[in-house]
Amino acid sequence: MRSIPTLRSFAAVCILGALSVPAFSQAPDTVAQAPSSKPQYIADEVAAIVGRSHILLSDIERTTGEVLKLRQQQGTLSSRPARAEAFETLLLQKMLAEQARADSLDKDLRGSLDDQVEHQIQEMIREAGSVKALEKKHRKEIYAIKDDLKREAEDMQLANIMQSNVMQKVTITYTDVARFFEKLPTDSLEMVPEQYVYAQIVRFPPETEERKFEVRQKLLEYRQRILEGESLSALARLYSMDPGTSRNGGEWGPGDINQLVYPIVEALESLKPGKVSEIIETEYGYHIVELISLKGNLVHFRQILLKPTFTVEETEKEMQLLDSLARKIGTDKKAFEDAVKIYSDDKETNQNGGVVFNSRAAKHFFDTKYATPRFMKDALEPQDYIPLSTMKEGEVSAPYSAVDLNTGSTVYKIVRLNKIIPAHHASLQEDYEIIADFALQDKQNRELEKWIKETVRKMYVWISPEYRDYPFEHNWLKK
Image 1 (cartoon, rainbow, N blue to C red):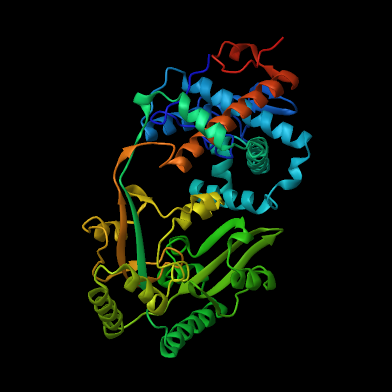
Image 2: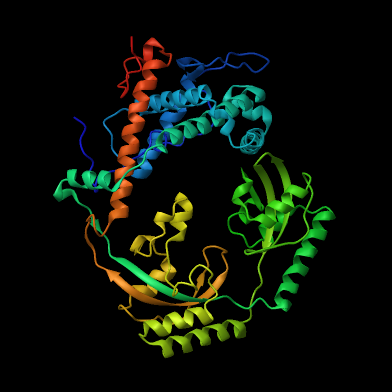
């Protein structure tokens, strides 16, 4: 009988989510090359066939290394051989991808894979030193390496699409959650850490016309230098204020263009590859972008981002205003809420009394149920936890500077600690959302396991005799 997972030990990991398989098949180092005046490329060994896809010995070798690396990173121990886990992960990936093709889900592939593959190839060539060195390292010609990259990237995308397609159909009711909770052993119920509910008044530094003009002039200078022959990549490393891309020469993607704010999208769609945009203003600051490629929704570009900087006097003015507000408000909740409406610049909180919700989690999971005002310690940003951890309910902090998580810009704020929820054993009444997540993951995994068993039974699977004694968890060797 299948054991019931506890909240303490329950880790509902999706079949493919536990292991991110790199999109490349490398021949094992033990394969020797025959002496010749020309490079000799050794044929790889086919270990299994799933539908119309095959798994090579080199796939197993490479994925085994990934399993061992993941176990080391997570500090997990397993009695199951890493090689067996890697082989079955590949079998599952191929099966999911094959079924996705049979169900015509390949139409949902996100844009062309050509740019992604070309980007990977160029990175690999840079690391190897040359095309010939790369071919020698992987014992394949460059066209074969590209084919492998594209095949693996497509299979991974299709496998994820198929898995999501199965799991997204699963829903739960309050009754499902209650039954799940009832089956959990009492002594296994996890302690929910102390939680905080807080509100804030946020001030953005004033973007004066003088500061905007200074930033635009700098970007115009950089754009002119690029047009005269300097590389945007080099300038981005020196001057861009976007920490996510500056270290890579301002490079973003290849990725889904829908992840970008509209002014950037509009500029990229009007450019030809290699061309540089005019100055673009967004909520993050001021940009110039250079299009590398755009195919469907898959975009690859470089950018330089600049933001206005402010004088000590301008910063002090905002801090003094917040300090004065904190002193006047004291512990009066109504006074704090009134001040939020008048003084707070934060659009997400200035209409609800300043109460902060975990909007980052909601955006990450594309589900508003995660937008809770309760923050566990490890979910709070250190910049906010430090003042909150020293406060009592109803108190207002001294003003402090922080980083706005949406724009990456410096802001100034005061926070009010509305409520502390002490650490406690999980309960259905207090922690329904947490328990519902576990219950949904449990039901999704059971539904996925059921689907896998049915699909394994129907799909053609051949495993080479020397690999048939592996301890598989599914019946791949059906008669």
